Image 1: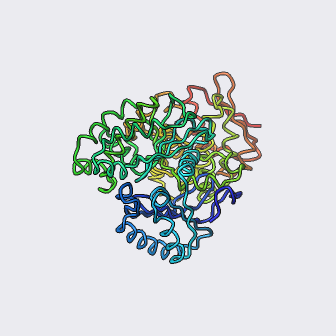
Image 2: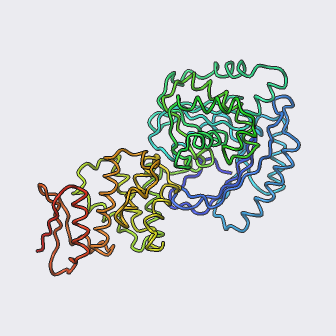
Image 3: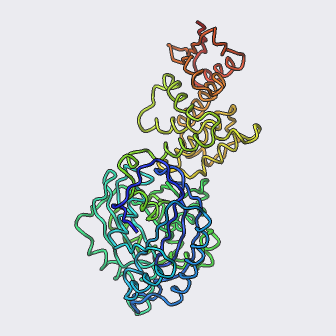
Length: 498
């Protein structure tokens, strides 16, 4: 199988592509498709195999794990045979690379299933995890922490560039093995982390968590804190707020933890050991924020293959543009709508401009929902959508603006806990954006050429809509929507007919 450096993805559309990840604890099949810069999950299945159980002591792959892995691959090969995949890849990580029989097992799998398996090194695995973070946050800075069954990978990101990567034998399965031979886990963690390369910083702002154990941790933290969103990608909390949850996990039985999350029992059994590693990393790097990444080494695998042109694209905008192209009645109108409304939104800058443009791309993608429920469907869809390059506050802003695009939003009907993620000024801006899109859409019937015949702009205390009489675009509904927008902006509506 070609390495990421040997083959570059140069098209903005990722054709249906599969990847099998043979990890130390789980074996997973993921099939991606859609925009390259923000791929969608067409299919996702994992099997808890435990290849790395007992590895530290035996130096060999777990026999039961071998049998389960073979069975999993047999099923996965059958599944993908019917999926019309353009490309298919297979990678293997710590358990396979560290075991004395790993190469033999790889040869067996390659011959039996007629596949090519790329066994990644520890440094490569760290780079892939960091690349997964860059899939969602192109300009990310901080430490990426990816914990699997047998190993821990750390990578240092600085303004979107991978500066350093290192692997440690500190996976929760490995720590179990140390405990069984009577070694103190805290000492093992300290000894390993003391060997960290000098290229890693001492203090950081953000610690990015990648991997199944951290996803389980995020779910528990969300649930015990009644957090309104359930999307793991971009979930950001302070390091201090995580202490109580880690203490709860460390002191609770697995049966108690199972009541707080949908994560599997196999995953929860690994979590207490993973927490010990995380506490040591927090003590070492002293991060202010913990950010959970739903993207990991599988997404990073694709990111490493992107051409420079694809990497420079914004994941949020590419995802929303793709949705417009595949779901909107008039693809391409979103960009015209954004250009049209910019004169009345003078505070748009490079950062929030992405959110405003994303909203315009999405403004007509829910049209197939029943008219009575489009507004509500918009809110639910956006807050749970597979989107990268956006934080949770941004999701709620997008959802609220799109909700307002379809009707006058009654905030009493919106989840208060979600609204609490935004300040009042941001809520107001989202509603103004939504009302602006609603006016532009109705005025032009979502036809870009119609919209370009009109102009909207600010003039003193007035919001002005200029149009030509001969185009016959003015109507009572247009006047009402301009008046409502003016009301939200505390301005006077003015229509100029030429």
